[in-house]
Image 1 (cartoon, one colour):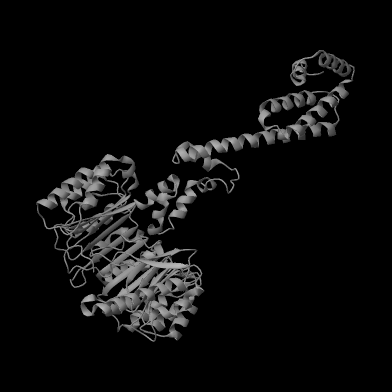
Image 2: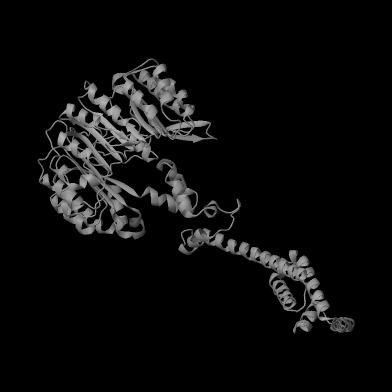
Length: 625
C-alpha cells in the first residue's frame, strides 16, 4: 500500500493547485491502486531511485529530500514477496543516500569546528574532538587541524628555541604550544651587575597570572650578591612569589650566597614534592636539604666541604630518596682533597640510571661502587683518579658473556675526561677495551684519550650518534679515518685538535656524508681576534674572516642547525630557500653555569657541548668568560 501521507506528498510535489493537476493526480492514484502489491512496491522503488539520482544536486533541499527517500524505501522494504535482487537494490540505494547526506552534514560540522579553532584554539572540547576524529583532513584546512595538538607539540620539541620563537606569530594555536615550551625552563639572574627588572617582572607575573605560572616547570636562580640589604630584599620577594609557581618540578640555586637553611625551608614548604633539586656554589650550606623526598635528580656542586651543612647530609639525601632517585650529579673543586666515599655507601647508588662525577677526585671506593651500579645508562667521570692503576684494573675486569657486558651492561652514554692522567696509557687502554662491542652506546666523549685508541673502538659502536673527539695532529688522513669509522646516522660531532695541516673550516665538505647531522663543532682552541691586541683595520679584517670561515661550514652542510667554531656557538639562520646563510651568536658560558641556559636544539647536542667541565670558581660573580 502507498504510504499514508501519499496525498500530502503528491500535493506537495504538484505545486500550485489547478483543476487539470487535480484530475491528473486522481487518475494516477486510481492507476496505482489497481496494481498488485509487488508492482506497487516496484513503482515506489523506481520513484525512490529517481529521487536519489535527481537529489545529488539538490543541496538546498537536503533535509526534505532525505526524509522522503527514507520513508519510501522503508515502506518498500516492509512489503512482502519482494525478490532478493530488488531488496538489495533498495538497501544499496538507501545506504548511498545516507552516506551522501552524512558527508554533507560532516562537511558543515567541520566548518563549524574551523570557526571555533579561529575563535578559541585552546578550547578543550574542540581538542578532544580532533583527537578522536578519524576524518580525512584536506590541505585547504588549517595545519593545526590536520594533526592533533600532541603531534605539533612533539614537532616543536625538536625545533631550537631561537627558531621556535617564530611560532609566536604564526597563529594562536602555534603560539600556545611555543609559549609552553619556551617558558618550561626559566633562568633568572640576580647580581649587583645584573639588570634585575626581568627577574622582578617574572615574580610579579607569576603571582598575578596562574596560567603563566603553570607553564613554568623548571626554575634556575643565579645569584651574585654580597650579603646585604639588597640581597635580603630579593630573597623576601622570591619567598613571596615561590608558592605561586604551582607547577614547579625542578629547582636549582646557583651562585653566591649559597642555598641556606632558611631558603631550604621556604622551598620545602612551598614545593615538598620536587623532582629535581640542584645546589651549585662555593660551599654546601643547605642544612636540612635531606628533608626532601621523592626526588628523581639531585645535583650538588661545591668547592669544598666547609659549608654550614655537614657532608653527611648528602648520604641522608640519597637514603631518603632511595626509591625514586635515578640521576645524581656530584662535583667538588679539583684543587681540594674531597671524598664522596661516605655518600657512595648508600644503597641508592645501585638504583641509579644516570651518574655524573664532575670536576672532582674519584677514589677507588667510589669507582668500586660504580662497578656494581648495573642499572647505569649514562656515566660521566671527569676529574682525577686517586689510584689510576686500580681504575685500570676495574675497567679491565669487564667481560662479554653471550653478548652482554659484565660491567655496566646498559651503558648508552659515557664521558671520560681525565685531568693529569695523559701519561697513563694503561688506563686508556683498559677504557678502550671496556667500550668495545657496545652497539647500544649513543654518546661518547673520551677527552684526551689518544686518537689511535679511540679510532680502534669506533667501528664497534654502531649505535653511536654523538661524538666528542680530540685528534692532536689533524690532517686529511685522520679526518678520512674518523668519517669512515662512525655511523652515517651521526647527529652531532665535536672535533678538537692542537695542530692542523690546514684551516679547520676546509674539512667541512667531508662531513656531508652525514645526512642528518644537526651540529658540528670544529675547535683548535683558537680565540677570535682581540681588539686590544690589533689595530682597528687589522681587527676588522680578522673578525670578518673569522665570521666568513664559520659561515662556510653551515653553507657546506645544509642540515646543520648549530655551528661550533673554536669554542663559540652559533645558531644557523637560513632564508630564501636556504640560499642565504647567516649565523647568530649564542650567549657565552656564565660562571657556575651547569650545562643549561643555552638551547642547542636537542639533548644530543646539549650533552656534547656541556660547558661546566671544569667549573670556574676562581672569579666571583656571574661574569662572562
